[in-house]
Image 1 (cartoon, rainbow, N blue to C red):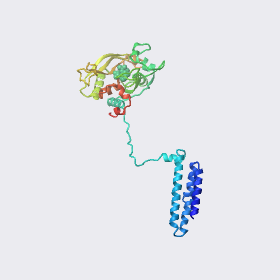
Image 2: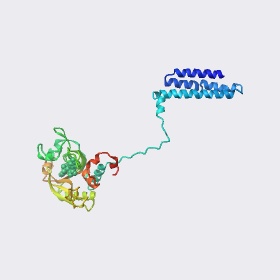
Image 3: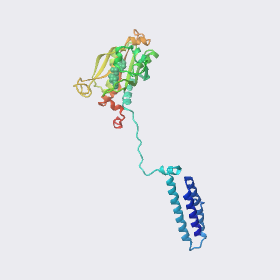
Image 4: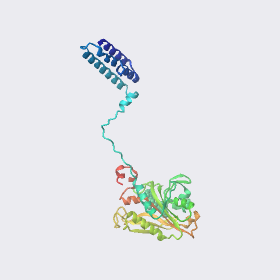
Length: 338
Ligand code: FA5
Protein backbone atom coordinates (compact mmCIF):
# COMPACT_ATOMS: atom_id res chain seq x y z
CA UNK A 1 0.00 0.00 0.00
CA UNK A 2 2.92 2.31 0.77
CA UNK A 3 4.28 1.66 -2.68
CA UNK A 4 0.87 2.32 -4.21
CA UNK A 5 0.83 5.70 -2.48
CA UNK A 6 4.36 6.57 -3.59
CA UNK A 7 3.57 5.49 -7.15
CA UNK A 8 0.41 7.66 -7.16
CA UNK A 9 2.40 10.67 -5.93
CA UNK A 10 5.01 10.21 -8.65
CA UNK A 11 2.39 9.96 -11.39
CA UNK A 12 0.45 12.94 -10.13
CA UNK A 13 3.60 15.09 -9.93
CA UNK A 14 4.69 14.04 -13.42
CA UNK A 15 1.28 15.03 -14.77
CA UNK A 16 1.43 18.32 -12.88
CA UNK A 17 4.85 19.13 -14.32
CA UNK A 18 3.62 18.75 -17.85
CA UNK A 19 0.27 20.54 -17.34
CA UNK A 20 0.25 23.91 -19.10
CA UNK A 21 -3.26 25.21 -18.66
CA UNK A 22 -5.76 25.96 -15.96
CA UNK A 23 -8.14 23.28 -17.33
CA UNK A 24 -5.44 20.58 -17.14
CA UNK A 25 -4.55 21.53 -13.55
CA UNK A 26 -8.19 21.47 -12.47
CA UNK A 27 -8.64 18.05 -14.16
CA UNK A 28 -5.61 16.67 -12.26
CA UNK A 29 -7.04 17.97 -9.01
CA UNK A 30 -10.32 16.18 -9.65
CA UNK A 31 -8.54 13.01 -10.83
CA UNK A 32 -6.45 12.63 -7.66
CA UNK A 33 -8.05 14.69 -4.91
CA UNK A 34 -11.73 14.78 -5.92
CA UNK A 35 -14.41 12.86 -3.99
CA UNK A 36 -13.95 9.87 -6.32
CA UNK A 37 -10.28 10.68 -6.95
CA UNK A 38 -7.47 8.09 -6.93
CA UNK A 39 -5.95 9.28 -3.64
CA UNK A 40 -9.36 9.38 -1.98
CA UNK A 41 -10.02 5.78 -3.09
CA UNK A 42 -6.65 4.59 -1.74
CA UNK A 43 -7.33 6.44 1.52
CA UNK A 44 -10.55 4.48 1.93
CA UNK A 45 -8.60 1.20 1.58
CA UNK A 46 -6.42 1.97 4.63
CA UNK A 47 -9.12 0.31 6.75
CA UNK A 48 -8.16 -3.03 5.14
CA UNK A 49 -4.44 -2.73 6.11
CA UNK A 50 -2.88 -4.36 9.20
CA UNK A 51 -3.89 -2.36 12.31
CA UNK A 52 -0.30 -1.36 13.23
CA UNK A 53 0.30 0.02 9.72
CA UNK A 54 -2.87 2.11 9.55
CA UNK A 55 -1.61 5.25 11.41
CA UNK A 56 1.49 5.46 9.24
CA UNK A 57 -0.50 4.98 6.03
CA UNK A 58 -3.01 7.61 7.19
CA UNK A 59 -0.26 10.14 7.86
CA UNK A 60 1.45 9.36 4.57
CA UNK A 61 -1.70 9.84 2.49
CA UNK A 62 -2.46 13.11 4.27
CA UNK A 63 1.07 14.36 3.52
CA UNK A 64 0.70 13.41 -0.14
CA UNK A 65 -2.69 15.10 -0.32
CA UNK A 66 -1.31 18.27 1.25
CA UNK A 67 1.78 18.32 -1.01
CA UNK A 68 -0.32 17.82 -4.18
CA UNK A 69 -2.85 20.49 -3.12
CA UNK A 70 -0.10 23.07 -2.53
CA UNK A 71 1.53 22.25 -5.88
CA UNK A 72 -1.76 22.57 -7.73
CA UNK A 73 -2.65 25.89 -6.00
CA UNK A 74 0.80 27.32 -6.75
CA UNK A 75 0.61 26.26 -10.37
CA UNK A 76 -2.88 27.78 -10.70
CA UNK A 77 -1.73 31.06 -9.16
CA UNK A 78 1.20 31.19 -11.56
CA UNK A 79 -1.20 30.95 -14.49
CA UNK A 80 -3.21 33.90 -13.09
CA UNK A 81 -4.35 36.35 -14.36
CA UNK A 82 -5.08 34.13 -17.41
CA UNK A 83 -8.24 32.07 -17.18
CA UNK A 84 -11.28 31.97 -14.94
CA UNK A 85 -9.52 30.76 -11.82
CA UNK A 86 -7.08 33.67 -11.97
CA UNK A 87 -9.93 36.09 -12.44
CA UNK A 88 -11.69 34.65 -9.40
CA UNK A 89 -8.51 34.98 -7.32
CA UNK A 90 -8.17 38.63 -8.31
CA UNK A 91 -11.79 39.38 -7.63
CA UNK A 92 -11.56 38.28 -4.03
CA UNK A 93 -13.85 40.45 -1.90
CA UNK A 94 -12.93 41.33 1.64
CA UNK A 95 -16.34 41.16 3.32
CA UNK A 96 -14.89 42.53 6.57
CA UNK A 97 -14.14 45.96 5.03
CA UNK A 98 -16.43 48.79 6.23
CA UNK A 99 -19.07 49.83 3.65
CA UNK A 100 -18.84 52.96 1.51
CA UNK A 101 -21.55 55.54 2.22
CA UNK A 102 -23.87 56.50 -0.64
CA UNK A 103 -23.48 60.18 -1.58
CA UNK A 104 -26.73 61.97 -2.31
CA UNK A 105 -26.93 64.37 -5.22
CA UNK A 106 -28.69 67.68 -4.69
CA UNK A 107 -30.45 70.27 -6.74
CA UNK A 108 -28.00 72.86 -8.10
CA UNK A 109 -28.35 76.25 -6.35
CA UNK A 110 -29.27 77.94 -9.64
CA UNK A 111 -32.06 75.41 -10.23
CA UNK A 112 -33.24 75.94 -6.63
CA UNK A 113 -33.40 79.72 -7.04
CA UNK A 114 -35.04 79.40 -10.47
CA UNK A 115 -37.74 77.12 -8.99
CA UNK A 116 -38.27 79.47 -6.06
CA UNK A 117 -38.76 82.44 -8.42
CA UNK A 118 -41.19 80.52 -10.64
CA UNK A 119 -43.20 79.45 -7.58
CA UNK A 120 -43.78 83.11 -6.61
CA UNK A 121 -45.24 83.75 -10.08
CA UNK A 122 -47.26 80.53 -10.08
CA UNK A 123 -48.96 81.84 -6.91
CA UNK A 124 -49.93 84.93 -8.94
CA UNK A 125 -51.60 82.83 -11.63
CA UNK A 126 -48.69 82.68 -14.13
CA UNK A 127 -47.88 79.40 -15.89
CA UNK A 128 -44.48 78.14 -17.07
CA UNK A 129 -43.57 78.13 -20.78
CA UNK A 130 -40.39 76.85 -22.45
CA UNK A 131 -38.62 77.71 -25.69
CA UNK A 132 -35.58 76.45 -27.65
CA UNK A 133 -32.01 77.42 -26.70
CA UNK A 134 -30.89 77.26 -30.35
CA UNK A 135 -33.08 79.97 -31.80
CA UNK A 136 -33.87 81.63 -35.11
CA UNK A 137 -32.50 85.15 -35.53
CA UNK A 138 -36.12 86.11 -36.22
CA UNK A 139 -37.37 85.23 -32.72
CA UNK A 140 -34.25 86.33 -30.83
CA UNK A 141 -34.04 89.72 -32.56
CA UNK A 142 -36.28 90.69 -35.46
CA UNK A 143 -39.69 89.91 -33.97
CA UNK A 144 -38.52 91.78 -30.84
CA UNK A 145 -38.09 94.95 -32.84
CA UNK A 146 -34.31 94.52 -33.29
CA UNK A 147 -33.79 94.52 -37.08
CA UNK A 148 -30.56 93.31 -38.70
CA UNK A 149 -27.77 95.92 -38.39
CA UNK A 150 -29.68 97.71 -35.60
CA UNK A 151 -27.22 99.07 -33.00
CA UNK A 152 -29.29 97.44 -30.21
CA UNK A 153 -27.83 94.08 -31.32
CA UNK A 154 -24.56 95.25 -29.76
CA UNK A 155 -26.21 95.11 -26.32
CA UNK A 156 -25.83 91.33 -26.41
CA UNK A 157 -22.69 89.61 -27.70
CA UNK A 158 -24.17 86.81 -29.76
CA UNK A 159 -22.94 83.29 -30.55
CA UNK A 160 -24.00 82.58 -34.14
CA UNK A 161 -24.58 78.96 -35.21
CA UNK A 162 -25.37 79.96 -38.79
CA UNK A 163 -26.34 83.27 -40.43
CA UNK A 164 -29.93 83.00 -39.25
CA UNK A 165 -29.50 80.73 -36.23
CA UNK A 166 -28.14 81.83 -32.85
CA UNK A 167 -27.75 80.53 -29.30
CA UNK A 168 -30.50 82.63 -27.76
CA UNK A 169 -29.08 85.66 -25.93
CA UNK A 170 -32.14 86.09 -23.72
CA UNK A 171 -35.44 84.37 -22.88
CA UNK A 172 -37.49 87.12 -24.58
CA UNK A 173 -38.01 85.08 -27.82
CA UNK A 174 -40.36 82.83 -25.81
CA UNK A 175 -42.74 85.84 -25.57
CA UNK A 176 -43.07 85.85 -29.36
CA UNK A 177 -43.45 82.08 -29.69
CA UNK A 178 -46.24 82.04 -27.08
CA UNK A 179 -48.11 85.09 -28.46
CA UNK A 180 -47.96 83.62 -31.99
CA UNK A 181 -49.80 80.54 -30.72
CA UNK A 182 -52.17 81.95 -28.11
CA UNK A 183 -54.72 84.76 -28.00
CA UNK A 184 -54.78 87.07 -24.93
CA UNK A 185 -54.94 86.78 -21.97
CA UNK A 186 -51.35 85.51 -21.69
CA UNK A 187 -49.62 85.21 -18.33
CA UNK A 188 -46.37 83.21 -18.45
CA UNK A 189 -42.91 82.94 -16.96
CA UNK A 190 -40.20 81.24 -18.98
CA UNK A 191 -37.03 80.03 -17.25
CA UNK A 192 -34.01 78.75 -19.18
CA UNK A 193 -30.41 78.93 -20.30
CA UNK A 194 -29.13 81.80 -22.44
CA UNK A 195 -25.73 82.46 -24.01
CA UNK A 196 -23.53 85.51 -24.53
CA UNK A 197 -19.88 86.03 -25.37
CA UNK A 198 -19.14 87.40 -21.93
CA UNK A 199 -17.01 86.30 -18.95
CA UNK A 200 -15.87 87.94 -15.69
CA UNK A 201 -16.79 87.88 -11.97
CA UNK A 202 -20.41 88.75 -12.71
CA UNK A 203 -20.83 87.35 -16.24
CA UNK A 204 -20.60 83.82 -17.67
CA UNK A 205 -21.02 82.71 -21.32
CA UNK A 206 -24.00 80.56 -20.28
CA UNK A 207 -26.38 81.84 -17.65
CA UNK A 208 -30.06 81.61 -16.73
CA UNK A 209 -32.86 84.07 -17.22
CA UNK A 210 -36.54 84.10 -16.41
CA UNK A 211 -38.82 85.96 -18.74
CA UNK A 212 -42.25 87.15 -17.64
CA UNK A 213 -45.16 88.31 -19.79
CA UNK A 214 -48.67 89.43 -18.86
CA UNK A 215 -50.92 90.56 -21.71
CA UNK A 216 -54.63 91.31 -21.44
CA UNK A 217 -57.11 94.16 -21.84
CA UNK A 218 -56.27 97.09 -19.57
CA UNK A 219 -52.88 96.03 -18.19
CA UNK A 220 -50.97 99.14 -17.04
CA UNK A 221 -47.57 100.13 -15.71
CA UNK A 222 -48.98 100.02 -12.17
CA UNK A 223 -49.67 96.27 -12.67
CA UNK A 224 -46.02 95.90 -13.63
CA UNK A 225 -44.95 97.77 -10.49
CA UNK A 226 -47.30 95.81 -8.25
CA UNK A 227 -46.29 92.37 -9.55
CA UNK A 228 -42.54 93.06 -9.52
CA UNK A 229 -42.63 94.68 -6.07
CA UNK A 230 -44.51 91.66 -4.67
CA UNK A 231 -42.03 89.30 -6.35
CA UNK A 232 -38.88 91.06 -5.08
CA UNK A 233 -40.24 91.34 -1.55
CA UNK A 234 -41.05 87.61 -1.57
CA UNK A 235 -37.49 86.77 -2.62
CA UNK A 236 -35.49 89.34 -0.62
CA UNK A 237 -37.84 90.11 2.29
CA UNK A 238 -40.81 92.38 3.01
CA UNK A 239 -38.61 95.37 3.85
CA UNK A 240 -36.74 95.40 0.53
CA UNK A 241 -36.62 98.91 -0.93
CA UNK A 242 -36.98 99.18 -4.73
CA UNK A 243 -36.19 101.79 -7.35
CA UNK A 244 -37.69 101.93 -10.85
CA UNK A 245 -35.31 103.66 -13.29
CA UNK A 246 -36.10 104.65 -16.89
CA UNK A 247 -34.21 102.48 -19.37
CA UNK A 248 -34.31 101.24 -22.95
CA UNK A 249 -35.19 97.90 -24.52
CA UNK A 250 -36.25 97.80 -28.19
CA UNK A 251 -39.23 95.53 -27.38
CA UNK A 252 -40.76 97.54 -24.51
CA UNK A 253 -41.96 101.14 -24.31
CA UNK A 254 -41.65 102.64 -21.76
CA UNK A 255 -38.85 100.52 -20.31
CA UNK A 256 -37.41 100.39 -16.82
CA UNK A 257 -34.63 98.80 -14.88
CA UNK A 258 -35.41 97.86 -11.33
CA UNK A 259 -32.84 98.14 -8.57
CA UNK A 260 -33.04 96.93 -5.00
CA UNK A 261 -31.34 98.79 -2.18
CA UNK A 262 -28.01 97.02 -1.64
CA UNK A 263 -28.68 94.12 0.74
CA UNK A 264 -25.01 94.04 1.77
CA UNK A 265 -24.58 97.67 2.97
CA UNK A 266 -28.24 98.70 3.33
CA UNK A 267 -27.78 101.57 0.85
CA UNK A 268 -24.77 103.35 2.36
CA UNK A 269 -22.45 102.22 -0.44
CA UNK A 270 -20.00 99.29 -0.61
CA UNK A 271 -17.79 97.36 -3.04
CA UNK A 272 -20.65 95.06 -4.13
CA UNK A 273 -22.93 97.94 -5.21
CA UNK A 274 -20.04 100.05 -6.54
CA UNK A 275 -20.67 102.59 -3.74
CA UNK A 276 -24.05 103.48 -5.29
CA UNK A 277 -26.23 101.84 -2.63
CA UNK A 278 -28.33 100.15 -5.37
CA UNK A 279 -28.16 96.81 -7.24
CA UNK A 280 -29.70 96.34 -10.67
CA UNK A 281 -31.90 93.28 -10.57
CA UNK A 282 -34.08 93.14 -13.68
CA UNK A 283 -35.22 94.78 -16.90
CA UNK A 284 -38.89 95.37 -17.69
CA UNK A 285 -41.39 97.48 -19.60
CA UNK A 286 -44.73 97.72 -21.37
CA UNK A 287 -44.73 95.53 -24.50
CA UNK A 288 -43.99 97.72 -27.55
CA UNK A 289 -46.95 98.08 -29.98
CA UNK A 290 -44.60 96.99 -32.81
CA UNK A 291 -44.13 93.61 -31.10
CA UNK A 292 -47.91 93.19 -30.76
CA UNK A 293 -48.35 93.95 -34.47
CA UNK A 294 -45.71 91.32 -35.36
CA UNK A 295 -47.68 88.57 -33.57
CA UNK A 296 -51.05 89.77 -34.87
CA UNK A 297 -52.37 91.38 -31.67
CA UNK A 298 -54.17 94.73 -31.88
CA UNK A 299 -52.25 97.25 -29.71
CA UNK A 300 -55.37 99.45 -29.57
CA UNK A 301 -57.22 96.66 -27.84
CA UNK A 302 -54.75 95.00 -25.52
CA UNK A 303 -51.66 95.94 -23.53
CA UNK A 304 -49.16 94.10 -21.38
CA UNK A 305 -45.86 94.14 -19.60
CA UNK A 306 -42.74 91.98 -19.83
CA UNK A 307 -39.69 91.54 -17.67
CA UNK A 308 -36.45 89.58 -17.72
CA UNK A 309 -34.13 88.75 -14.86
CA UNK A 310 -30.80 86.98 -14.40
CA UNK A 311 -31.11 84.02 -12.03
CA UNK A 312 -27.38 83.96 -11.16
CA UNK A 313 -27.56 87.65 -10.20
CA UNK A 314 -30.41 86.94 -7.78
CA UNK A 315 -28.69 83.83 -6.36
CA UNK A 316 -25.46 85.82 -5.81
CA UNK A 317 -27.31 88.50 -3.86
CA UNK A 318 -29.43 86.03 -1.90
CA UNK A 319 -26.38 84.02 -0.75
CA UNK A 320 -23.73 86.82 -0.80
CA UNK A 321 -21.60 85.12 -3.48
CA UNK A 322 -18.95 87.38 -4.95
CA UNK A 323 -17.94 85.41 -8.09
CA UNK A 324 -20.54 84.01 -10.51
CA UNK A 325 -18.07 81.42 -11.83
CA UNK A 326 -18.26 79.48 -8.53
CA UNK A 327 -21.65 78.14 -9.68
CA UNK A 328 -20.03 76.31 -12.60
CA UNK A 329 -16.78 74.96 -11.18
CA UNK A 330 -18.49 71.83 -9.79
CA UNK A 331 -16.65 72.13 -6.47
CA UNK A 332 -18.72 69.92 -4.15
CA UNK A 333 -17.63 71.90 -1.06
CA UNK A 334 -19.34 74.94 -2.58
CA UNK A 335 -22.41 73.18 -3.96
CA UNK A 336 -23.13 71.16 -0.78
CA UNK A 337 -23.81 74.36 1.16
CA UNK A 338 -27.17 74.93 -0.51
C1 FA5 B 1 -32.44 91.32 -21.27
O1 FA5 B 1 -31.88 90.24 -21.56
C2 FA5 B 1 -33.86 91.54 -21.64
N1 FA5 B 1 -34.35 90.49 -22.50
C3 FA5 B 1 -34.70 91.65 -20.36
C4 FA5 B 1 -36.09 92.17 -20.60
C5 FA5 B 1 -37.11 91.27 -20.81
C6 FA5 B 1 -36.36 93.54 -20.62
C7 FA5 B 1 -38.40 91.74 -21.05
C8 FA5 B 1 -37.61 94.02 -20.85
C9 FA5 B 1 -38.65 93.12 -21.06
P1 FA5 B 1 -30.35 92.31 -20.06
O2 FA5 B 1 -29.42 92.18 -21.20
O3 FA5 B 1 -30.20 93.49 -19.21
O4 FA5 B 1 -31.88 92.28 -20.53
O5 FA5 B 1 -30.21 90.98 -19.16
C10 FA5 B 1 -31.07 90.73 -18.07
C11 FA5 B 1 -30.26 90.23 -16.87
O6 FA5 B 1 -29.45 89.11 -17.24
C12 FA5 B 1 -29.27 91.25 -16.33
O7 FA5 B 1 -29.90 92.09 -15.41
C13 FA5 B 1 -28.25 90.36 -15.62
O8 FA5 B 1 -28.71 90.02 -14.32
C14 FA5 B 1 -28.28 89.09 -16.44
N2 FA5 B 1 -27.09 88.94 -17.30
C15 FA5 B 1 -26.80 89.58 -18.46
N3 FA5 B 1 -25.64 89.11 -18.99
C16 FA5 B 1 -25.17 88.16 -18.15
C17 FA5 B 1 -24.05 87.29 -18.13
N4 FA5 B 1 -23.15 87.24 -19.12
N5 FA5 B 1 -23.89 86.43 -17.08
C18 FA5 B 1 -24.81 86.41 -16.09
N6 FA5 B 1 -25.90 87.17 -16.04
C19 FA5 B 1 -26.10 88.06 -17.06
